[in-house]
Image (cartoon, rainbow, N blue to C red; front, side):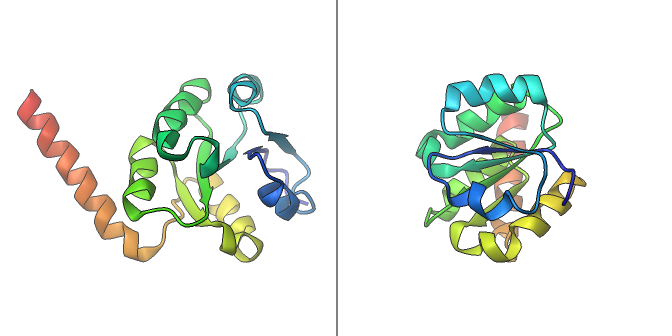
Length: 144
């Protein structure tokens, strides 16, 4: 079993069921407000956040999570969401994204690489992420 401390924020058992057998230090919360308090106290290495907790407000929630624990790396888990929403999550500070359909095959590996500082992103999203970063830099330079 891995000793990476993992916090799961999910109103279903989808994510928790797939990792409890692989990780000895897993905490699960289905209440987003309680999760903020738990994350501030535990400072987990990795946070697995199901997109359905806040849907299109997930970016704002990611920022709140990172205020509570700057060292935590966030991986967003979701069913079918638009590429723009995935990119918004990365721009808010997420370090990984995984479709629910992939968690049984790839979640353990994603947790390991993200905990070491790498990103977990599908290659076809990289160009969009670079474009978002470029657009934000241009906007910031015009505002200054």
